[in-house]
Length: 304
Image (cartoon, rainbow, N blue to C red):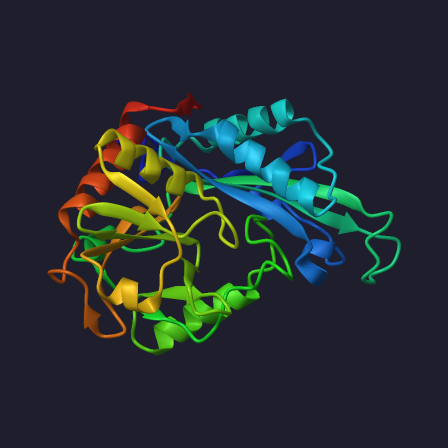
């Protein structure tokens, strides 16, 4: 896989884009009265830079603006400027493999109160050497997962397609899984149907059919879309249908997809072995193909 150009002996303080300027990390700041901190009032997107390319950058930028529009948050720069600043942020890191994040907050209002009127939005973009949600060595053998009692926020409250800053219920689900001795969480909705994990979309394979929850109260993940594209190229049947806990327990394979990790296989859920108890052949093929796409710059925007 693509190497990282910066030598450990040549490290420098990374730069963060904040409201029109780049600052050293130690000097990048937002107000303690920002609505993003006070109320989780904002949107964001996370991107993958690999081997000098940012994967599906335009899709990420489009999703950021769609999330902002849905919560009536005006991003104070054009899509093209946002696109260009993300590329520039990646270039300034000096690394080829990156975890990139762009977030927009409602900003600071006249008073530190809930009223969102007259706030001035803030834009922050940063890049870090690629961060893995799960240790790659551990994920080779597959992860254990828990279906949590913490439920995904219903779309009657806030639409799951909005990538917003209020992640408290997702943090609580992650805590529940960890405290139960599991690697990862899988979150159902109020009706008990499987939705997603903390930062992941959920897939299962049954009789060589790739199945994932339908568009609705789930995040429309960019990596999720890549997995569906791969399945089509493999000639596999795809079904976007509700998944029950029973379905997941009895799947031949279960895997998760995310920007910070790609495709991650699940070997057991709630103590029940999935398939052969290791990442299955379709999961493994997805994992390899995804990183082949990243390595070769397929659907990528060069930044390095």
